[in-house]
Image (cartoon, rainbow, N blue to C red; front, side, top):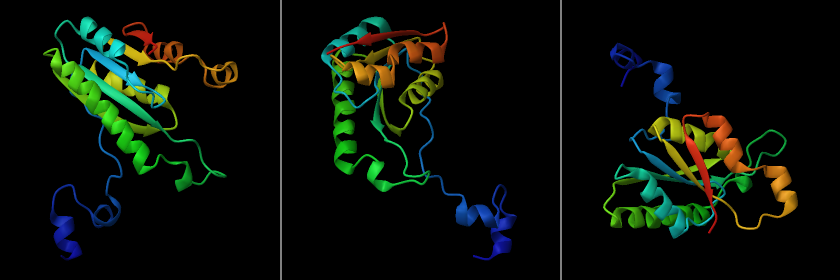
Length: 173
């Protein structure tokens, strides 16, 4: 294929042909009344699914889990800090399990797996993209004091990020 034939197509350029590949999928935008979120890869308990089903009033439910990226080495990406394939497979299984629990109650459900350094921002973007009215966050049971000091209260941070239009509630297993 010549450069001229690529340039003749609408929306294509020779530079985009070589370097225009997207690395990540677009944010899903299926509408959901309730979003179930597991910010640190914690298992999604049945109590969170029950709460989301009761809040949805028959509307669709979305499930998102965040695989944590731990940082970077001297500003450069380091593959050792990314989630492994086993961790991603475990996260995918948790999402599928939660979707099955939601669908057993006769409600439509969607799932999403994300890898992020900033789980609060990722959850807020997913809730906005889906138009969620409620967010059910899975909290880590019995956080250590130093971890709570470093990470902060995820429920407060997500509710601050989303504003007053969305109700954010934490559920512990």
